[in-house]
Length: 225
Image (tube, rainbow, N blue to C red; front, side, top):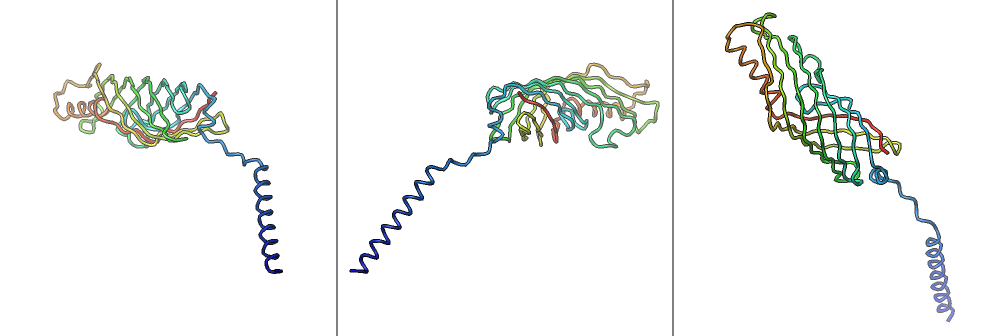
């Protein structure tokens, strides 16, 4: 009999302890969850951003850009952009008195696949000026051209909200696909009809106006509100 009483008291005490603990847990407030980057975008409508370094849409040249974006929702941004560049991304690329510069405008849509990772697609219009000294003929045989191109570009990257209103983003990699291009003017500084010199000029036009270009490492900072 004593054994049965002991078992009964033990079960009753254990049940009371579990019930009391569960009730106390219900009274405790749930731990506050840390806000995600998407949460910080919820009440934002606009952002401005300055791209400091990177390559694209024109190959080889380090680009800079200013963009203004409208946040359709926390996962979608529509933006317009002014971009350009005139310096090589890697020092030494523009030896032989090479000069490359371009300016352009574009529009793009940026969609977030999760809180920070995004897919980006856009259309660009830009003008480029190229001048170069030929290795084959010395300083008297320079050539160059001015051209115009329209392209579509696609990239992937990440964007973070820093200190709630700040923006840090990087387009890691992408491609630029020329749609249409025109040579507005071209020249050589000699009347020579050298086939090699003409091929150099055509190769330069092909690379900067018609070839698919690589986009990478476009780092930008900005502000959202």
